[in-house]
Amino acid sequence: MTRPSLESALQTAEMLFDRTQLEAIVAAMGQTIATELNGETPVFLTIMNGGLIFGAELALSIPADLEFDYVHATRYHGGTRGSELMWLKQPRLTLRGRVVLLADDILDEGYTLRAIRDFCVDQGARRVLIAVLCRKRHDRTAPDITADFVGVEVPDRYVFGYGMDFHEQGRNLPGIYAI
Image 1: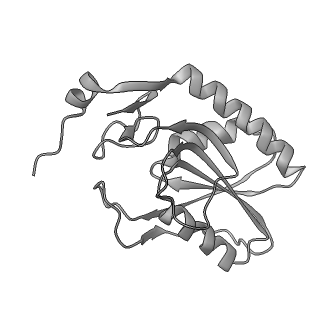
Image 2: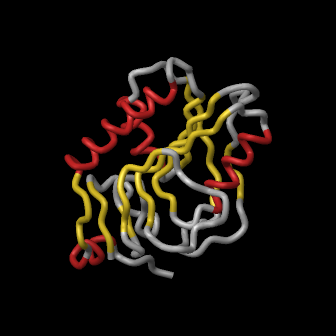
């Protein structure tokens, strides 16, 4: 099966946010998170692969000490419809008694993010904070999942770039696009 062309998608895509806008938004989010942390050193868990770009930029924007690890769990397996959660990498750091800051690209339906948050709680995390670059505007979000810090709201469309993929392509685009 041939995957759709990123170049073709970009010809009709609408740029929602450019790199300059996103950098300013993430920088402000980092300051807000530092205030919320109030001197604590959290376990900063980037959710791969989508959270890579946002997580790196966010970490650089938080003027506080952070202890890094990552998780990799997916329901999409390269597609656009979620299925059963598959863990590819669980954190190696001990979460018991710690504040955990999850960094992810988007809160869409939220089932994967909720499962990761619940895993952290089950591992004994004292507090789990969630930072997402985007929150999609719709009413299909899983029960009992919200983000503590949200960069931007995006429409209920297929969005990609800045960590989010278009059929496993375009994660490194310096903006967020919608089709």
